[in-house]
Length: 613
Image (cartoon, rainbow, N blue to C red; front, top):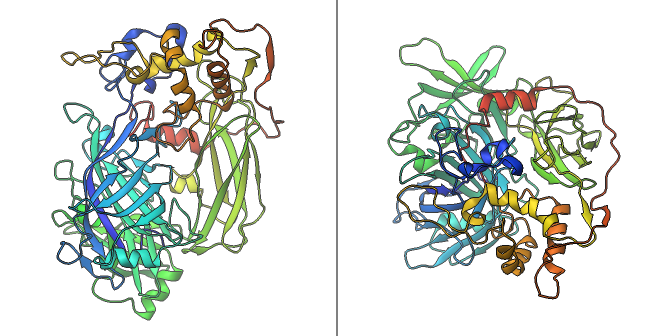
């Protein structure tokens, strides 16, 4: 069920992704050929691109609850109807800002939020709800959502959970009181859609955010819904659509929030024709109901979620159709005699997704990705999952991770994929490790999930092995720190950094390219390096430092000399490799859809709607 539930509230406002764009260009990772010009702003791909001074901070601004729904399906659009309407949606006040980061310069299509806490606050400053966002990457990145083009015309969504939820006094709000009652284990489900990102002027780095908060139920997926999944039959401006059939209430909840095209000026849905959800079979289609999606302000109040059919329940015949036949969303233009299918469910109703779809692994380390298969919205038991890994970037003959998967899905449609990293060497020379796309499918279903939805694969960053010296010195750690200083000049670059004409220079927290600056700040750097990856103050912001390099830096920072500072000169002798190399036991990859077609569609080296630092 998750957020797509009768009890839910919608929110709308703005966000800021203060991204650094120096790291957009892979050649900027080469310390030996790095130019100070790369830290200056430039048009398109010149110099450091449009925002070289970004810090990676991700913030909410002017965000409020716009509508609240209750168990009986009734909606409240004013505070008089439900006090939840109008509540401010804010971040935590006792920590640094959350961070938005890419997986890698070659995979900027799964930018991830770390360290975000959300609060619902009333006008008197009372906290009604507080929860921690489980880190998650965006999904279904679509550059064709608006005619604005590029990142300004793109949208994507983040679906996750708020964990460790603390409730204030919510008795006066039927929506929040019911949400608290039905949710499991102090956990809520949340979906956030970002769009209308601005890349110039005083609002550079700002965009719009719209979302939904609903109950979470124990055992359900965190990053997607167990429901019905519709995708465009061919590449167009529409993105995939999620639906859930509420059998008890005889309703279909449909979420088109990240799918329908929007007006770049008003932000509302464009008129795409008369839209009707239908259940299809060989004899034709049974209409379930039209979507009333074109009124002013509709998007910010509904987040694109509608209940069908409006004003009545499904009949027995309709309920039988929607539970056993593929769903289609049809568009009929004014004056047209027939409708076009804009998104559709697979004919066999099969769908498979990875619960977690972004991984960072050191050689020898393993992680589990749970694959969840459904058929017409219910668990697909006994299905056979197939997986394959391939490099996301050249060279194609990079060593592959080891993959092991259970043979069949269990009664809940789940199977576990174990990913074990090996040492990929240094195929990209000055960029650590290699990036891989891990695709998956069901033997029983002919439709490749990544062709059905181009976002539907696992991204893996596999770090290179490192041989660490017994007693490291500045010369051993400087190349690591210098790269961060080059790529992220605002927090870690030159002592006086003034990229924009007419604005005063900034003063970086620490110049990582200078021994004295690093030595003075050593205790603070070691503290930040030791923080959990989901902490907003974790260092590096980018989360792209391998465990071996982290251990090397911590060893150097803590084994100080007689002057109390980290050593300038280290020992010559080297220790054993700092990471274990796993045995390679995989076949050579066959180039496939996951990397090539996805990169071609999004042009990820050019467009970054939420590129991290």
